[in-house]
Length: 183
Ligand SMILES: [Zn+2]
Ligand SMILES: [Zn+2]
View 1 (cartoon, rainbow, N blue to C red):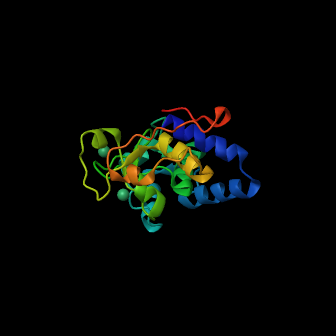
View 2 (tube, protein in one colour; view 1 turned 120 degrees about the horizontal axis):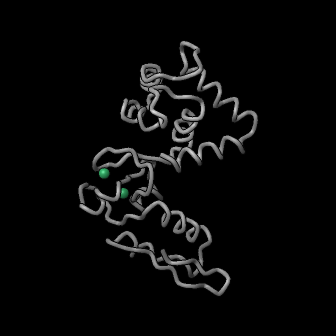
């Protein structure tokens, strides 16, 4: 959770006053008894009311509660806020764990579907999933891939090849200045 918490804090510090107020309002709505922290009962009650079914469990609460004092202070809460607002961190479709570091995502669903299909490294490696598409990219490679699709041109990989099966995208140099390193 370390990296995600760092990201959440960085976004908050760089946010507008309006965004910061939004975060504080959400925190206050979770903190029903107004004691300045959110306990697991408040957490589960509000998240189920708001329809965040996957986040709504004590295991995930413990992940957020980094100092282990059984309540979330504002900084710990910001991690939750970031996860909900950015929708950037999914759960593994194989084993259901929260994907807090590297994960794999179906490239086709990522580009053309409302729902992404995501897997932890262990489930992807062990083929512990069933899905109609076969091409998966890790979250870092996905970002590089998206950039090349946006830029277009010769650096763009052949997408029919991408969706045909196992594929690690290897980008050719367009010219000296636009070389993208191969992961
Ligand atoms: Zn998994
Ligand atoms: Zn898919």
